[in-house]
Image 1 (tube, rainbow, N blue to C red):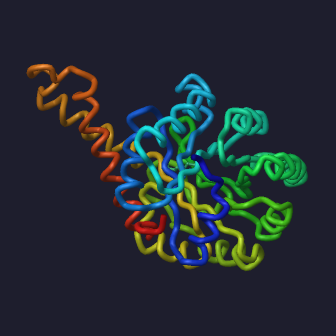
Image 2 (image 1 turned 135 degrees about the vertical axis):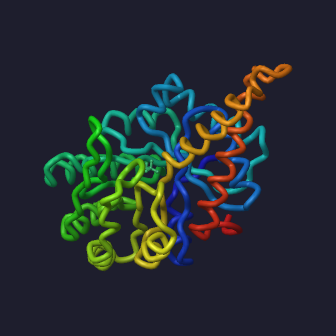
Image 3 (image 1 turned 90 degrees about the horizontal axis):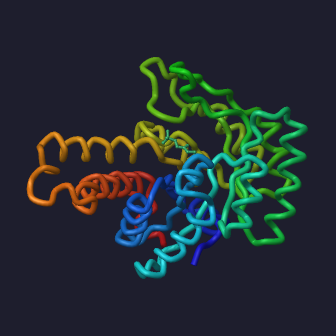
Length: 287
Ligand code: 13P
């Protein structure tokens, strides 16, 4: 069964650890993440971007696959299926498809419009028992080969959005999706502390979890971060392990071309990455 993130993240915030949101791209990804969470007795959030949802033929396919996998694999730890950076329409589609949690990313709208759209989604989510993440400020990332630094959140705007009744809040604090550039200035803890003070006990979300040094992760958790999103790091470890297999010529030995063999090293590498993250975030044994 899928659960919303509300309870697992309130527990994480109170217990000073964070739950990993690991983005999934296909069956192998999902299976590796679920198996690792179960093995480590950790709660987990499966993140699905709109692009990944489309790749897997639609949100209904994703929800059906994840629910069936939880049952077939005998997964007993809390699992949330969460839309990552959703548009308003994408949020409605995921609610309809059976996701247990959604993120509405209205950060690119003027704040008044972000507030209005978030308010409407709060109402729908409350009726359906689904958790809702909203975003203020923006997360940097690569666009057309240039890495943008994002925009730090305004703590007062964070309070406006938090007061609408959302469950969790993502605030831009100098974090970036993808790999961090050489000249990255690090997370802005002054902004994080100010946001944390404004929003009370609301669990905060740190996007762009790939490549953030351990000491910054610990400090962010101490300032209210209870969910950390990781996507690129699993892609990198999957690609590296697959490359190693092919470069060693293993796909040409015996039935090494069988997809169940060809994709196995990548799937194992994802497990290792997820394990590292769960240990670093402190969620092991917290299911
Ligand atoms: P990374 O790809 O940098 O790990 O970021 C993931 C993320 O924040 C998804 O919302």
